[in-house]
Image 1 (cartoon, rainbow, N blue to C red):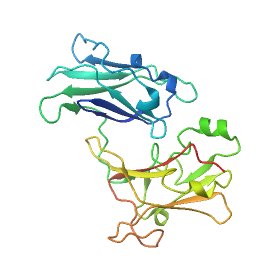
Image 2: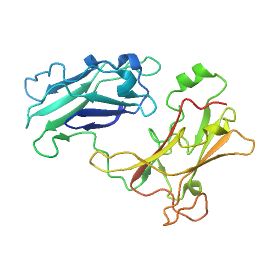
Image 3: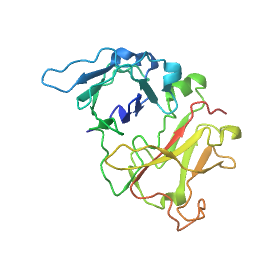
Image 4: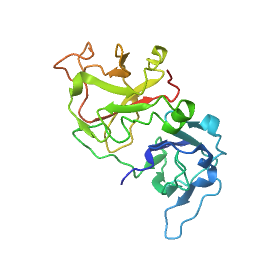
Length: 256
């Protein structure tokens, strides 16, 4: 299943967490666009399944993560479908509907996702939604300062697979101008990875070193080696683990 809108969904007894793969127009994040219905020959729509969405507290624009809070008790043993409809992206284009089947179970694991399983690749997946050149929202960056934006990222968008020792663990982000040095930290550059597996997995933080060229507008993000005592940007080391997907999230608040 091609995931054009949703990176992953985590359904539990209290909440549904949706990680979007694209920047979403906040005004389209309303309850009517998140429909829960039974999976049956004659589906039954669950009335008002979630508490009212408060986009200030329930939606994280940086990680593009929405948290929905259940307002109903679902029936154990029943298969359900979460339909995400009528959402718009940052450039006001309507996004095609996506559907997430899940089951209400008994016991310690009350919900089971039955879709959005990632393929069990042996290679390292880094393209698509991993290294993003829009820094959360290029629209928001340009609105703040049209002369400051990301020009390119190495590896480039489309390099889905990289070597374990790619560029000695260094990712290069080329800006249109030199960012202020006070932004060169993990508050503004978040480096994450997650294991590629058939069950949903969580992104975990990866310790890194962030620096900048002495005069070029290049920011260097160095991943740690896999040694017991990690090193950064050293020849003949392994930096990217096979079977993991990597991404770098760059804050829209970075400035010159």
